[in-house]
Length: 254
Picture 1 (cartoon, helix red, strand yellow):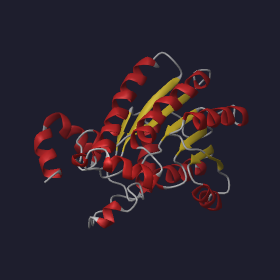
Picture 2 (cartoon, one colour):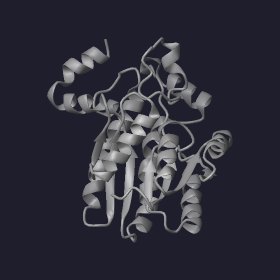
Picture 3 (cartoon, rainbow, N blue to C red):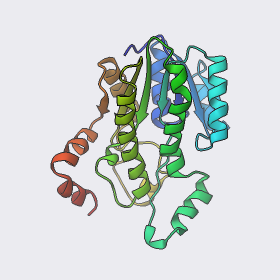
Picture 4 (tube, rainbow, N blue to C red):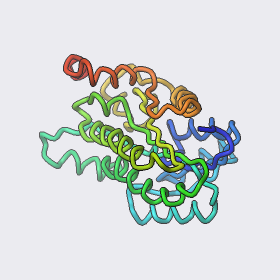
């Protein structure tokens, strides 16, 4: 895949991996559009990277996904790359019944299934008819090493990332005879605010690798047309899920 001269939409692009990707793609001569749920984060991203195009959008809501699609296609008809990156991560104790699920929903205004997985599926469905008309196009889905071997205290997050992997495999097969390439980026733990400070609260000293490292690995993988771009320790989780699942799962989950 060429990594310059594209028009790229990045969901969850105002912070973390999304912002690091936006900055790197801009430096390579691409037009970059980002969306995010909060105006404050979008403005901070715009202040840092004035060439960005921004739109406030909660991708968990179908009405807003529709508006995003219409706005992008109307204003950026050359858009040829969709990067599904938006995500949230929560620790959930299902022994409490739905209470923990509902508490996080009320506190954070977001549902992991809707944001981490459903949005990816529906945004792909919205944009594929447009992308398929382009000479070169791509859909890049950001999953996680935890989609291959989960941390049990984050059951929904890990399940959504596993679903993204499966979805990417099926989508790649469906689109194999079209101009659309389907990539999956598989990061390890990354030092972002994905978990809203939960790592700090539980005393986790290893906050993960910088988002910029993931962005650079993504760019290198896209240039090489690697369908699955596993970064750092995520390579071991992907391989271990096939060869040594039980031992690695036990070590990760105490």
